[in-house]
Length: 118
Length: 107
Image 1 (cartoon, helix red, strand yellow):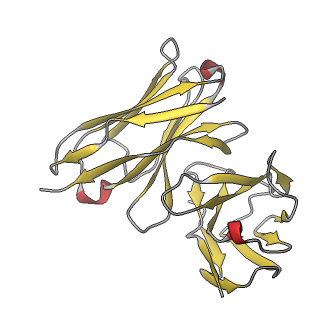
Image 2 (tube, rainbow over the protein chains, first blue to last red):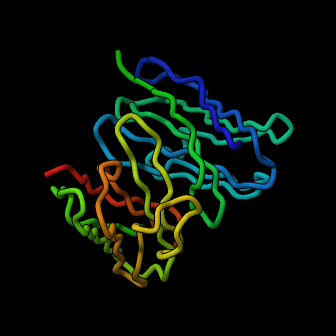
């Protein structure tokens, strides 16, 4: 059974940093591109970042470019999102999602809440 | 960036109704479109990919159509478990984008 479990969310002050993790199991992690998608409270879905299976290709939304860094460790079946210079507008539930076919997300984690507030 | 506009944003319907949601892209995206269903407090669930391909395990009352700039998601006979918010997503180019969502509520 495919499972994606996010962790690392919490309350952080504006300007602070946080590192999210996503532990994957039930599939060959190293064969799939992975993604982060966020959802602000009461709002819609916003794609954040994508990383290819071997980390060769990485993409970011303009809203996080230069502040967030996506990475992965295929030996540990884990996906990461390093978030720096956090802003109030980064407050959201962050989901990791598996890309099964050209940026189509077939499995999602349960999400981890990041709250940026003083 | 490619913008996706869903209509309507809110839909009130009864069990058994046929429901259609439209997603319009700001430029042509061929068939690079997916549809997701999201229930409150839950992660999104993939329903349709490549504009019209039903994801494994998704009931056949869901169908998708369209190409280019106009797409539709149809629920042929609305069931109680279908009351949720639906999102389209384009996969034609980065940045990936989602529509603003269509909330389907019980009439």
